[in-house]
Length: 410
Image (cartoon, rainbow, N blue to C red; front, side, top):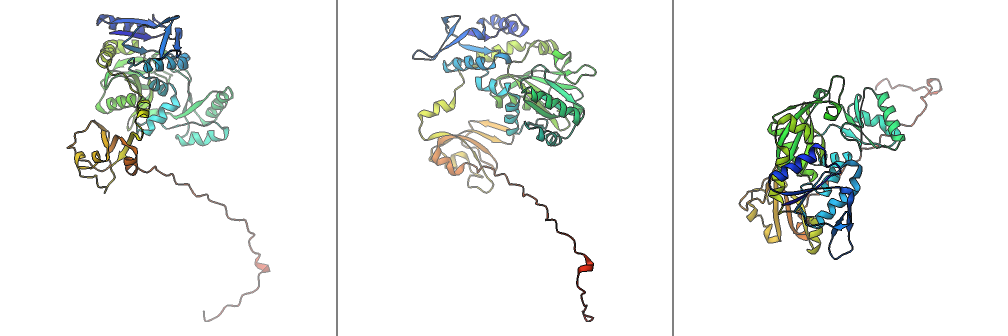
C-alpha cells in the first residue's frame, strides 16, 4: 500500500511516528507538503500536481492539516476524494471539526452533551448570553484558537463584558461557555480510530491554570474509560465525519461533556502517557479500510432521479409498530432500510425479521415520493406571547367622585 501523509512539518513527533509505523508494516509512505500541491481541473478527470509534476498513484492519504492552511488543505483533500483515494478524515469532517461553533452545533443536534454555550455578535446581547449559560465565571473561546490559545476564564460579568468587547473590536468571533467547576482543571483526551477508542489519557492543569493542554504545561496520566465515555467519544468523532480524532471531554456531574473534536490530534502526549502504539493503530485501520473510499452520497444520488435518503420515525400508534421490517410494507413501496437507531444504539443493515418499536429511527434509501408521508413533521417552535404593559391611567380622585347611595336591603 502506498500512503501519502499531508504535513508541512515532516520532523515533528506525530508525522515521524506515522511514517515509521507505516514503514514497519511494509508500506510505502511519503510525507507531502500540503502547500506544494496544485489542483488540476484541466483534463477529463480530476487530478493533482505536486511540485510541478503530475502526482503518482496513492492508495490512501492521511491529512495532518494545520489551522493556518485550512482552506487550501481542505481543497487538496477534497481533490483526493474526487480521485477516489481513501482518507480516514474527509474534507467535510475536517471542516466540521475545525470550526468550533459549527462542531458544537452538530453535536448538540445529535444529543451529545456539551457545556452550555452561546454565540452572540451585538454588544447588547452579551449580558443575556452570560446569564443563559449560568452566569459568571464563564469561559470565552476564540473560534480559531488551538492548543489552549484563545481560551480565557472571566471570573465575573464585568471582566467577561470587557474581554468580549475587546475581542469583538478586533473582529474576533468568540463563544461564551459555562465554566464547569467540578472538572477541577482536568479533562480527558480519547483517541478514536474507526469505531473504538485506542487510547485515553487524563490531563491536569498546572496549579493556578485552568487549561489542561499539554502545550500549556499540563500533566498526563493513563485512564481507563468506562463504556459511557468511550461511546460518547466514538459517536462524537463519527458524527463529525472523522475516523481518526482526538475527542476532549470534561468529567461533569452528569457524565461526559464534549469540549472539542480534533481532526489532527497530536500523538506524543498520548503515546507517552499510555505507552500504546497509537500511530500503528491508525495505519492498521487505514490498511483495513483502503478499499472503501468515502462516497459523497449527494453526488452519487443525482443519477437516481426521484430517489434519495431520508430518516423516518416510527411514531407511537403507527401501523409500523410491532411489525417486522419485512412485514412493514416498506419494500413494496421501494424503500430500503439502511440503519435502525434505537435509543443510543445504531443497528446497521438490520435483519428483515427485526420487529419495529415506537420511536425507532430508520435511515432509508428509496423513492422520495413514497417516503414523503413517513417523514416526521418538523418541530415548530412556539412563539412566546409578548406581554404588553397595561396603559397608564390616572387613579380616580375620591373627592371628585359623586356620592353613591347604598341600598340598605342589599
